Length: 346
Ligand SMILES: Nc1ncnc2c1ncn2[C@@H]1O[C@H](COP(=O)(O)OP(=O)(O)OP(=O)(O)O)[C@@H](O)[C@H]1O
Ligand code: NI
Image 1 (cartoon, rainbow, N blue to C red):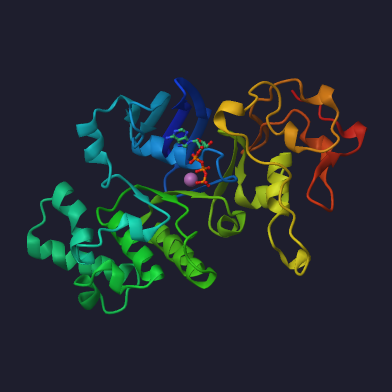
Image 2 (image 1 turned 90 degrees about the horizontal axis):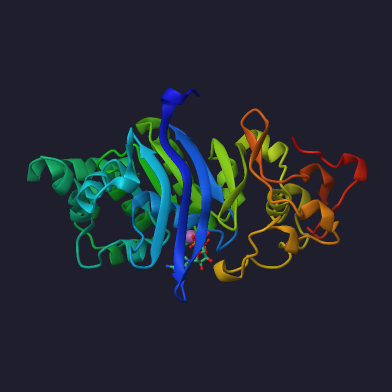
């Protein structure tokens, strides 16, 4: 991958929400490059700031409640400097979004075919007939059986899995170069989840679309994403290629997330969730190590410093001054390892 292949470049993005007349960052000085034709997964527990990130790229935040700074370069332009009119030309065409709940994403009163055509109506000059033809083609692309028939059906006549395929069909109708999928499979049962993931993978391969896949479920992304970016309290704490990351997770938070996944090795065992909760924006301690309150028995002196995101092997970034120092115990608690291992961190 070279710099020429960068599709989206997020630079120093801070998105803050207003709570009681003060603004608190939900995304805190974020940097991320998304390359052409790659799937980057953003993972982290509920409340870590994943959706806030996706919504910033889509320009969806309310202006009264939100302050945004930094840059979001997309195909040479900074989306944050765009007016609403300019953004409307990009949204739904160049960048589109898939949401978690297909029922709220779809219009219950409009047949699904027409919903797929909406974007084409706005962004292309296709005739009515051509739009219909294309909508039916897209329905078969997302593997809807009997696409001509389904074209004229209403969302409530379809199953949850089929509805999510319609949402995907709407998202790809104008052949976007970037899709932001926010928990696209969370509302579906496990077998349907797997099919939707296969579909997204196939679409990416065929259409060369890049996908930012937002999820709290590392299991979903492990076989789908090219890279994984782990978010905690609005910061990326680790970014790496999926294979490397899974083989050698570095940040204690990443290790805990991985450890709380069901796997062949821990079948039948009780799964261990990470101790404590993600702090709310107005209660977050922003100095020092943000994950420290959720680690057990750790040495205070190690965590005074505010860690920065550093590249510790090629393409593998971690925000922790002492990641080598920690292990995960049998109860998924982060505990201190050997003193000799303390990473001195340059
Ligand atoms: N409009 C808002 N006003 C104030 N706070 C908000 C607003 N939207 C989100 N937040 C807060 O910002 C933080 C990040 O929220 P966000 O929805 O981005 O998390 P998430 O990682 O997508 O979680 P989930 O997995 O539950 O969707 C949370 O603390 C949330 O409560
Ligand atoms: Ni979310």
